[in-house]
Length: 210
Image (cartoon, rainbow, N blue to C red; front, side):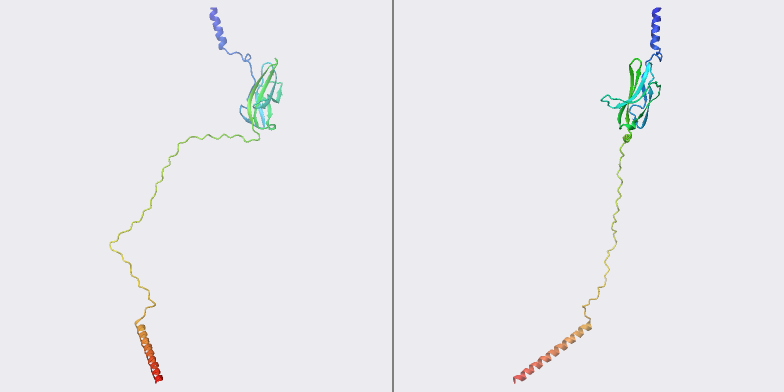
């Protein structure tokens, strides 16, 4: 009986959750979120309330923090549960990647901390997300039908077609019959006159010789 009772108590202790006060609390930053782009006055939200709370501080550093240097933003002597931890003025620093840290100091001299990485963009354009192109099936291009112009075919005629004769223009060098006769008469008259003159010249020469 004692063995069974011991086993039942062990099972109940394993299955039943421990009281909230027995669980160890941890600091956390709820805003801004990890990787968020911030600018201007940034409200740092979270929880610093823990058992044996002594004080808390919020600081920032470059990301990556190669030198391990932290720059104080605000300190607090009162614990905060899901509220405003500090107000961070990002206009006094250059744009870049930073790390926010919440550190809680306990009465026993130990500390707990929470960090979140953010991006400050006061003087550079905010990145815009471009939608990824979706693969679409290529459209099938069909050739457009070509229209051929109809060639007129000559029509056959039942009988041959001859060209119509046209009258020739009058020839300016052509002579009419009256002009021919008049020219012939002039030629005979001129020949007669020349012959008579030739006879007179012969008679005169004959008379000079005698």
